[in-house]
Length: 92
Image (cartoon, rainbow, N blue to C red; front, top):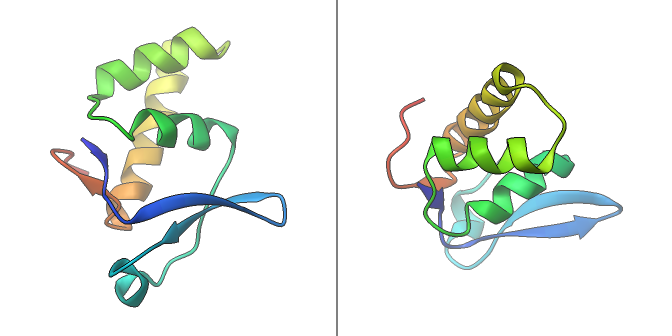
């Protein structure tokens, strides 16, 4: 899975916000604000990644136990999926 083309992160008043570009401007009605971990995962998902690769990257980057990391990643991916921001295979 990866981030769909046509979406970028933009710093707006100190918040990292997902912004649609191009054709996505018309269809995207949500405002998605990411925290630091969300930005980290977003950047990883610029290239094709699976959940195990995301988990390993989070465990390497942050002082977090595996169960909490899995839960955080699942919630993040669910949010991206709910907002139709993922391409590839992810079943939420």
